[in-house]
Length: 264
Image (cartoon, rainbow, N blue to C red):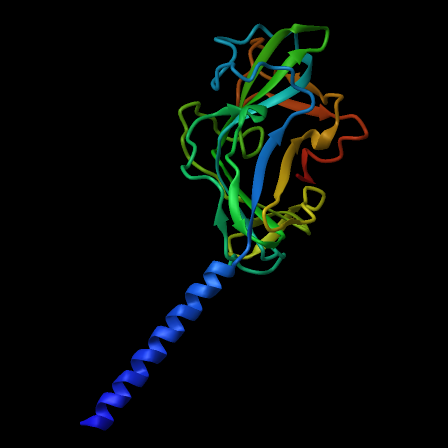
């Protein structure tokens, strides 16, 4: 009987010791903060403006070709995640992700109007960002000859001629940004590169400090791209899925967006 009591006491002490050790490890885990935000260096829009369309109807196009300047995007960012793992072409998504957004956003907003609360994260080096989008979005442009004339052009995340429905609430495959560029998961369930230049070199979370990661539209450029709108059906209206456009950007805009990492 005495032997059984001693064995029980031994295992009880061992379990308590292991539990304390785990608690101590958690207590000693260092954390810092990540402030994720969006930047549009071209837009001068008021952040208190409506998160939905800024025009009730588009003005008439000027002819077969209408020259406009791209100012912003009005689209839905659903959620944002980060990972210390690296997204690499040919590998499946088996990374451990930490979600930055508490609630999945369902509304379309101007790119520069997104706001994300600072997130406490375990200290370490983070190499990848995952972002989800809804399928439909609106391109915001102004008439090149008269910037007071504004257009909001319905589009999809697919090709210019993909079917369009302004009531579409579907989501497209997430975009995965990492050292090797912007990736998608292909039909085989492995990563493939969509754009090598749209990459993030990583950022570090340090104890008690804040890393600021800015997702920049136009990759920091301040001169807008020219968008030529082609009225293919001749009705002087922009018809998503029917009409076409061509984009001509300044030399400094090689990619649609990039990431700027700073520390506070």
